[in-house]
Length: 295
Image (cartoon, rainbow, N blue to C red; front, side, top):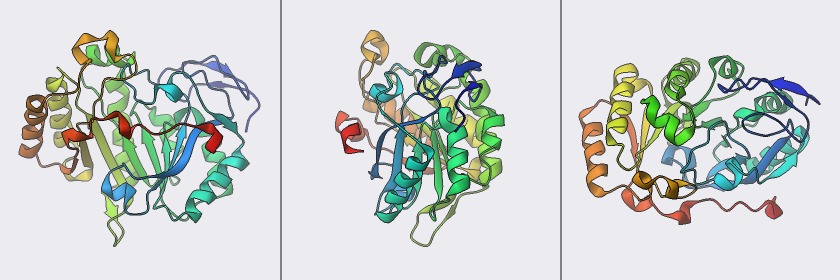
């Protein structure tokens, strides 16, 4: 791990100084890996979680600032535990020993330097999943080629006014679109083990927001036009007004059955394959427990 460097890993292009334990960039993170949870996770898509769980490592800090983030404790406020690259490798090995189907890195972008270093020392025997909000630089993703087997990005928005309002990223789609293109280039079409677990490919997630069905429909139509059967799509109905959502009246509620059905009906018209999350998943009980005393 570098003691100090100037960071431009994500589209924020902060060019901010990061030392071992602090940073002046958008994510506010230092060079050391900072994690908030490491455990088998059973609430991902079926081909990720399977029966034994996805070996999920939640990183602190985030390159986005979504006002509705359910993980705000770690993404915005930086709750977590600093660990070395060696310690990270031990967490990966411990998850493997528990029999997980993959190693799932959640919001890993601020730590790409250390992640590359770690996996140059030790490569797990299971696929590595890169679980991201989609706001990525192609240059950074190219450095992960041959390391990441499965990309799990969001495509949250097409409309810049929406991404600016809810994630402080008017240029979200300008970066997310080529980023997903690079992910698909690296992984190719989805491939699965005999047990149905994904071993290679890209799953693009989209979360339906209240009063934003037009944005959701535009996202689905774009994915269908650009990728068809080259990706899987995961349409998510789990939106729950948490974080700072109460400051935005139009999204300070769950989505309605009518909004859900409106978007779902469009998905059913398209050639996209994948997963659909039911409305009853909109519940705060699905928010992970972040307790560093358990690490």
